[in-house]
Length: 187
Length: 103
Image 1 (spheres, rainbow over the protein chains, first blue to last red):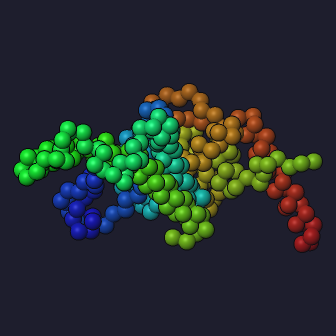
Image 2: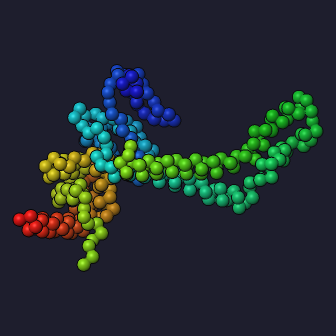
Image 3: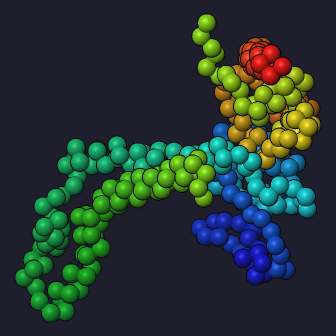
């Protein structure tokens, strides 16, 4: 991107780029969270001393982006395979803890009987408007469409929880794969 | 006698411990390691940060008070000194036997 004249300036919900002079640059990502602000400052100071400019990331954002700032500085933020791989390990651990955080919530939903499994096969059960299914024409459609978002919420919103568990577990698995691959020296 | 499970130290860990005989912050450690190793060991920032974190966990090094508000300063602990000596003796032994064998 930098070569095409787009400078990476930050990250919010997506990557933010700004028009800039085309340049050949090196941008590297680390994954780290910090307990204290002082730890984060110390971390950034070390990278700045070593010729990297901190582009994006906060104390607890995890993702930390660095841009090569010194002419004769290092080409990478890691100088051995172990530390390069350890970054993927931290990433994988984060996804695992995120996935496991949703497991108790899911368990509570199941154990309190909050999941209406009958509705999976008979979605009509999710509509509470009296006499809805006896109505016809425009009156039916108006009531039906009005209640549909609530019915979906009642019947299927819980699916988001297992979906997130699966998705996060998948990310963890992917990061772990990358960890192993890096460790074996295949990139 | 059972050998300490942290032995042998890696080349980088050995040089970091040696460098931390005197208190130093992250970047200074990197420079000292490069100097001590005669330019053989050049550590990148992310690698050094991880190594320092690990040595703190093992209690081979500890943070000390510093005047620098941003940079943390570390120094080797008694435990770190012990492990450094053990590894030095291990390597010394290798050198002795190799000298005798190759004579």
